[in-house]
Image (cartoon, rainbow, N blue to C red; front, side, top):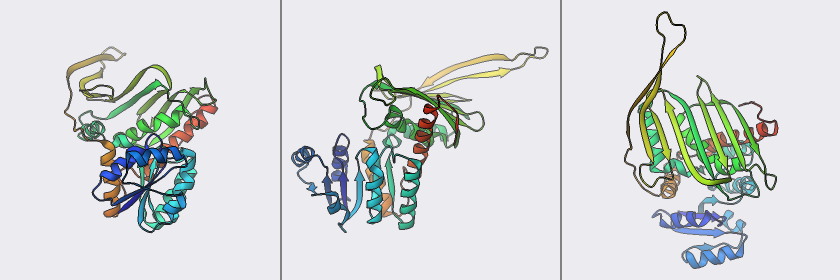
Length: 332
């Protein structure tokens, strides 16, 4: 099989390295409009083939898969052209700039029996896999809430706000872990620089009184990458900044009881043991590449596919609408 990577900015070299490392890939083509990046790739990856332009990649019958790692506003046009030339596509997050674009790409892929892989990389990490295992085993019980904080100082993006830049990571994890369909969202944010919101909060509402909250910020003095999943049995904390014990499961909770003759509820707190499960440490991107390739060979959808990309873009688009209306609740 042969692959191509279009766009070799920050993330592109990581894609090139992992495609080259796969035993199922014979040759990797690359293209970028920035000639200095092509010079960089020539020196770092002498085995790649430099394409003269995008059309050379799209017109090649030998190239079966195309990875698109360009700015989000170019994803749709490039992905649509690749699908129309019968290429399986890998698209960086966020999938597209709008729900309409995501729907169109998914329709084309379905009609042509092609795969779309959306690079929600965290789904392939040992930590998120373990979280999924714990939740699916009902160790936490019924999920009551999901709380996420992803904040740091920079990097500002010129084409999207902080929600489109940072929230896709945690939204994709939320969908993967909770297996619930959101019904409405509300978002608030402020733009202190460049016209794009640099700090924002997203509230996601589910049926059965379940709730998720996301805090994203480009202007925090500290870097925090933390999630809490709260169930009616136990609670889980994932701190990606920890070198060890990234996941901690707490046997803690709250029980509401009514005593006869007393009309107000009695709150009882349960604080039990905490344990940190062992995690498998494998490069997530390498697992993602293998999943993409295997899904093509096995003629099935990859784990993180166009439908998942669409679900995330729905939240992102609704968040923009809510922010413009000062936090108005948007029904999904």
